[in-house]
Image (cartoon, rainbow, N blue to C red):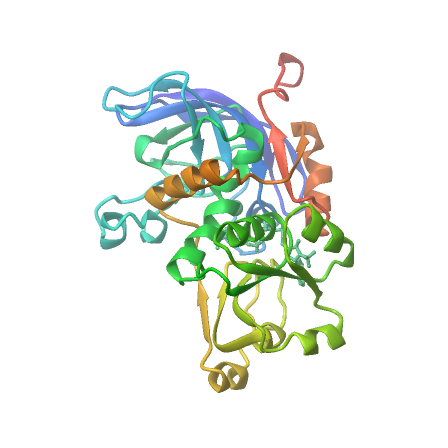
Length: 354
Ligand code: NAP
Ligand code: ZN
């Protein structure tokens, strides 16, 4: 199999620092789409991977799985896309395409998923979107709706689908119900917007008091609950129908379970590196449910993008150049981002820094 030269920024150790990196990409085969990358969001999963929080990072790794770009090449079997199309690529770039999960359009739960970066694949390893181009099997490429901005739309490819999918699956969409969004970062701020689009009352549950005004006035939440304020937490007990937790670090579950009403649902999408303790009494006592969810299948991701285009849902972003990534990563580790960093990839890779 041939290959071509690619350029990106990679982590080479657990320091959290990225640096310029030359590597090869596989050639575009019959079922593949090649895209020139224009923008790529910076997900907290990139940070977990760079730092090897989960213990399965192989260095060097080029992160990035909120990729938007323009098609530059298609293989002979590709009918859905043509050169010049605006497209997106999310968390996975391949799966077995045969198992029960794949047959139900749940490629995200296929045991043989190939992640966009840090996965073994076709004799090499996948590398993500902090780079100039990528080659992806057509099934894993999304059509990017015309009226979605490419930069502020990029985070929908992971942050968006990761909160949309569980809200749909767990039935957290009944108008008038009360949704808590725990953790106001990339995933959390998009969850507010879906919550409002579904007609829910939305309360942000956050540890950052400086996010209160924006949560309400800019992002559209109905209220803000400071998780470190015991009085307010107590007053809010038993008031929520659903909570989606996007918290990236180890945290106690008891306060979140306490906020739920009878039959309430706590859905966790955050991926802390260590196990959480599950207090069983508040769960059993209120017939509550705790669940998890892992991004989404390709069909549902397309549905989500089209939903966002219809409802004007995009991320609130801080656009950066590639050489600002190390500062961005540092800020992300301190929950200091409003509310997603997006790399202006195409305008970062001039001939001078390649
Ligand atoms: P993010 O932008 O960093 O947001 C996470 C938020 O969690 C922070 O803004 C902060 O919110 C809160 N938080 C951070 N540390 C905390 C602590 N020690 N205690 C309590 N709250 C804390 O991250 P993200 O990109 O939204 O991702 C969130 C998590 O979801 C990460 O673990 C990521 O790996 C995971 N993820 C999972 C999937 C999936 O498919 N399941 C997909 C994408 C990401 P406040 O400032 O409001 O407290
Ligand atoms: Zn992600």
